[in-house]
Image (tube, rainbow over all chains, first blue to last red; front, side, top):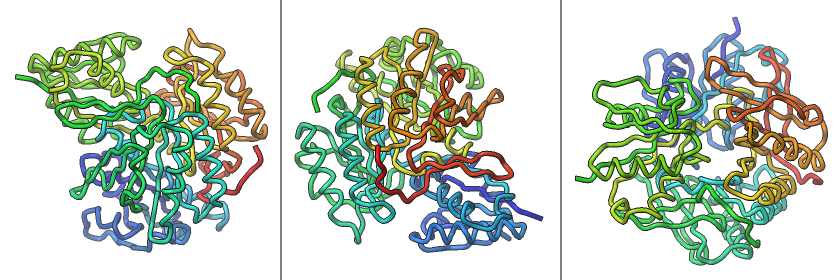
Length: 253
Length: 253
């Protein structure tokens, strides 16, 4: 009997930001597959097998999960945030397209999750309150020229810009290049948000003007958001709020 | 005593896609404020007051909610999807910035929700698996020229494009213009997703090639997603899957 594969978005980390649909899918799975950090977020259950893999092997992990499902397992692949945004869902469909014909018979379900950008935005105000772009700064799977082209387009369109995967040990210079590029189009006072480990105990969120954003320590767990020409800061009793109003005008860029 | 204001994302509609954090905020509120359709999604609770307002009066609704909170109420404003994406969070901060100084003392919390784009993407595969733009097609609060500028930029950057508020009775022609504009940059076979009322009983999702997408019936409850040059369809036992691979190349545009 063919099993099933559910690609589960765990949300940003706090249990209260994981949907009941995700909890239910995790409870029903015979096998959990995922990167160690994410599998460890799921409470252990008797009889449920855990298959831990390295973070960089997404396609291998997808294939392993499909093979398990093919033999009858109810497999849940766990993903941080939303599995459809720079995460496991696309990897699973890539594996299916290039894989065994039988894999197209497996019932696949994607359970959406609170993505890092939505969680980070909620913590600082409403920076994504108007038109925005979402770009992965990783050039592991695309040429850096395409990243530059998209940053240029996002700047030309005066979009708020959310940057996933801004930096890692192997990619130390990309964020500085991106901020330099955006600085040619936007004022130095434009708010930039660095949101690390949102909703987890080690959460750290900083808001800096674009002209001072260079050199701020950033890693793979950080989401960076750069304001549009309309994005504003507001001081309240809770500190600095960042938001982008619903109304907008044509700005030079 | 000053009260509090929580801006709650209800998610796309299905109860299992609303986070426990949202449920808890709704349970603790003395007053619910929101558009009728969204307030009606929340089960009635003894002693909890419901303040229903028209959908177009976002700023008025935000002010009413802040006034209630100022007098000591624990107010929850309800929003469909995520309150930070073309929804109530930005309206609340606009109201605070232009409103009573005392409103800056009110404790404001934003509870993120599964936005329509994440819910819709999960139902068809992984169309947002790579870089994407999110644009509201409404020109109620911005000039149409800015929408055109952003569509051109999104096309030039070869982004997947998610379109919120694609059409309404008062705005019947904008989506056709947007699709015409994108058609000048992308092949006629590019997949376009029309996702209506995702996760609700009346859910309807259609995938059409860009060249046949004109004239498809669309309303305010519809989210439209247009693929990039890399977005693919895949036939499985579950029907047509749409996904954007994690790897990408520079394409002409």
